[in-house]
Length: 143
Image 1 (tube, rainbow, N blue to C red):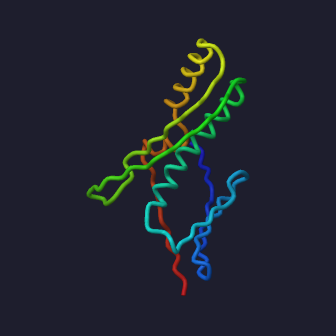
Image 2 (image 1 turned 90 degrees about the horizontal axis):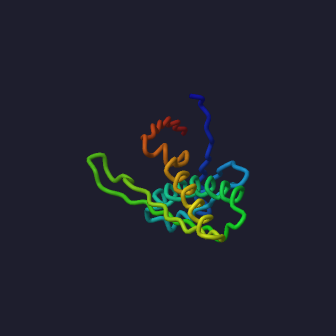
Image 3 (image 1 turned 180 degrees about the vertical axis):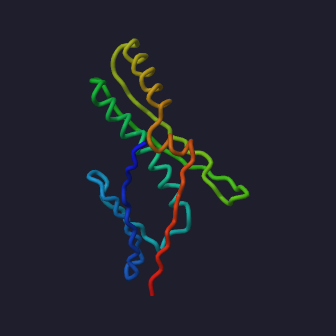
C-alpha cells in the first residue's frame, strides 16, 4: 500500500478570535471559523461534510461524465454521536441524496442501479471510517 497524505494547517488569529483552516487544495482553499461563537459540534459537522464531499464529488464527477440528462444533485449529511467508555464518539454519518435524471423509465432504472453500486463501494472517507483510523499526535510545545 502506498503512503500519501494531505496537509491541513490551522492558525488561531487571537486579535480576531478566528480559527483559520488552510486546506491547500485547488478547489478547497480555506475556511475561517468565528471562534468566539464556537459552542461545540463543529468537528461533527466537518466530519459529516468530509464524508458528503468525498462521496458527492466522486458521484457527481461520474454522473456528469456519463449521464447527459442529469438534472439537480443535492446531498445533505448528518453526524450522530453516542457516549461510550472512551467518551463521546461519532458512531454514524448519514448522507442523503436527491438526484434528478431525465429520460425514460429504463434510463432511470439503469442510472439508479449504477448509483447504488457506486454508493455501496463508498469513497475514501466512508471506507476509512468503516475500518477505523489511526490518529497520531506529536506535540511540540514552545515557550
